[in-house]
Image (tube, rainbow, N blue to C red; front, side):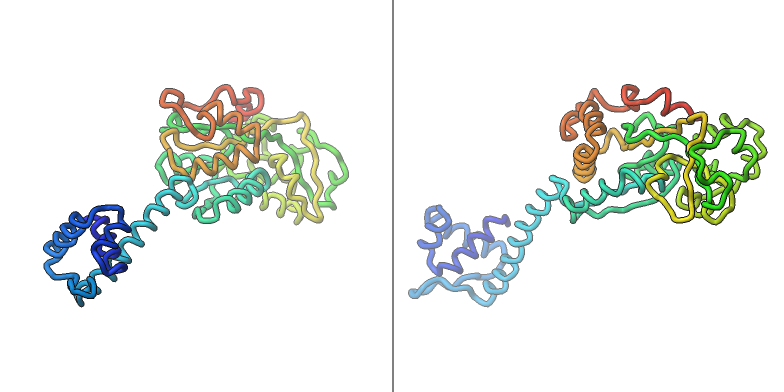
Length: 335
């Protein structure tokens, strides 16, 4: 039984006449009569009464036609759903990100993506860079935003593009002695109680701080460890100490805090967007298209790597992108 058999039966029921039904279907009457007879044999019941007044569904035919109509509606809906999924209008996108990405660029990107693809289910997971890399390699995420290029087993299978530079700044409470200063230097930081990110979560950042403050820095060994930049800012506002984090923190001003540059200027690992080179998901392509629109420089990098609108070539995939790395900044603090 094929979909056309269902259409034939429904058209015959609508016109109540083999000739008129055949004309509506654009076929000759004899083939239609044969197809209906074949359908009745397959179903095992007479579906239509042939009378002088016309052709009318039997009780079995009415029951069959009710299901046939729903089946054709489902087939039509399936075609629409398939086309929407192929265009990235539906489906699922699993995004892992570090907290600082919520300051920039995620707000604009997620807002635009939500407006353009309201029926794509976004699954958002805040996680440290090393964890999001592992999840991406394991197929538990579709895209990740973290600090520095992904490293470790399987990272060579990821495509990575730089989406932002950063450098180290300090944040203190408005009552702290450093409040009002435009900058603080390394010697000043060594004498303060510090608030820093977890070395387990962001090892590249901690490696850079050890380089800056000294491998055996007492200030670093007794520092308060915070989960994310929002906690760093909050603890600094409470007067716990001097918070150290990315310059992206400037996008999250809080009453009762003061931000200072750190001298010498200390680059932090670049903010990097990564995804599997093998992923052809339409939802991911739709997300990358939004990245292209929202971040033109990143869009150019993606187009260079994957081709316009994600039409990547088989021979141009795999390892991270050295031409989009920033050796002086992106690699400076990576371990």
